[in-house]
Amino acid sequence: MSTEAPKRDHWQWENAIAGAAAGFATVAVMHPLDVVRTRFQVNDGRVSHLPSYKNTAHAIFTITRSEGLRGLYAGFLPGVLGSTISWGLYFFFYDKAKQRYARSREEKLSPGLHLASAAEAGALVCFCTNPVWLVKTRLQLQTPLHQTRPYSGLYDAFRTIMREEGFSALYRGIVPGLFLQVSHGAIQFTAYEELRKTIVDFKSKRSEIQNQNPDQLLNSVDYAVLGATSKVAAILLTYPFQVIRSRLQQRPGGDGIPRYMDSWHVVKETARFESVRGFYKGITPNLLKNVPASSITFIVYENALKLLKLARKND
Image 1: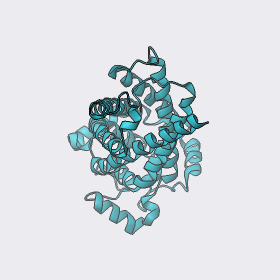
Image 2: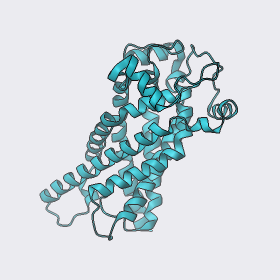
Image 3: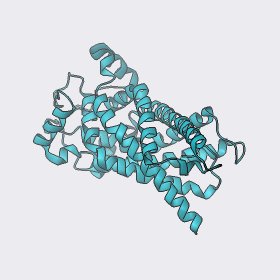
Image 4: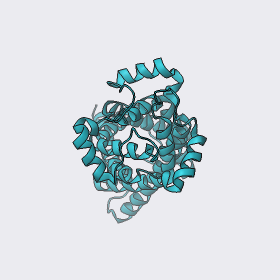
């Protein structure tokens, strides 16, 4: 992800494809931890249809024993779909915004403009993908203790939600989702870009080759460290928004009344019954999932982008 303004408009599609490939690889490897995280996030200790787990390892063992591999990969299809679309659109919108903010083709963007680019991309992606994340959350929360007829899959979930709750239900959790997407992405990408710039400058000074392309200075280990470090910073600062969104996106009970009415209701109830700790439920599996996942994402993205640019150059 170069800090310089992209030099060709037609590279935008290459950013989208590289991002989509990165998103798919991430979900395929890390989905079971996503299921565990979601179940921790919504379990406030006052519900009967969700099992209780002692820790991440106990959760994985219990889900495997009682629900099998299918339980560990509940919501996998919308997870893959949402992540692939999200990363593809994110990198596309992010690259597009950087081009627009650049004052000239040779000028490097400031941290503030990287922040604005990431925030803009995050907001656009959130509006496009919220329905997919809502369905994923609900499929992940279906357990043998569930009190209502379970969704049979992605299509049945969409159809049932539209019939029972209406179109607006697909956008439950959009407010914390927007705060999460904009702030998380902005923090992560700004940290990534600034750390990347620091490493490139450091390696440039040590390199004997003058004016070397930054892409040639960095390797997969560098991308892994950059992705993991920037992800940890973003998670720690934005995790409460994830908890609020997951709790809002739960399926209503048999009476059709949602457990939480809006974001402020979630904040009040969580603070009242669980204190600050409630806003960080599930953060352990979240870190275990997202820190290595972010490394995978940026390794795949940067290397896929290199190959696509090389192919373009050879044409």
